[in-house]
Length: 98
Image 1 (spheres, rainbow, N blue to C red):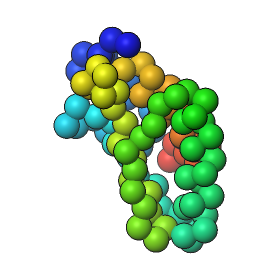
Image 2 (cartoon, rainbow, N blue to C red):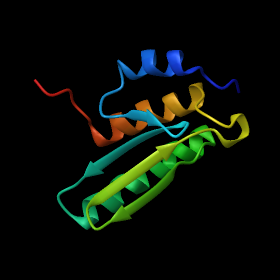
Image 3 (cartoon, rainbow, N blue to C red):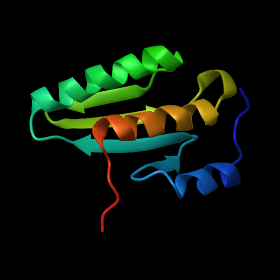
Image 4 (cartoon, helix red, strand yellow):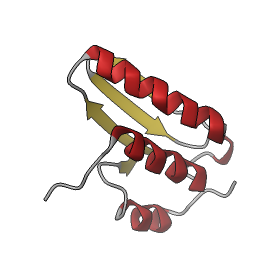
């Protein structure tokens, strides 16, 4: 999979709510109502990761989930990272603020 250029990444980020690009990776974090809700979201995301055969670097502390996406084989961000980020946003039901 081809590593995207910084221009391509920034263009794609215009349509990807709550994600940032730095350190050659996509980053976001989510805060849930409880630890249980956070773990539940992680489990739902895990199924999508398996489907795409692409796995995030992530940590959770109580009700907060931090996610980093990069394609290690490409040494940066690829289309696959954006596919997973979009799927994660749907799972977590990220909505644009009005």
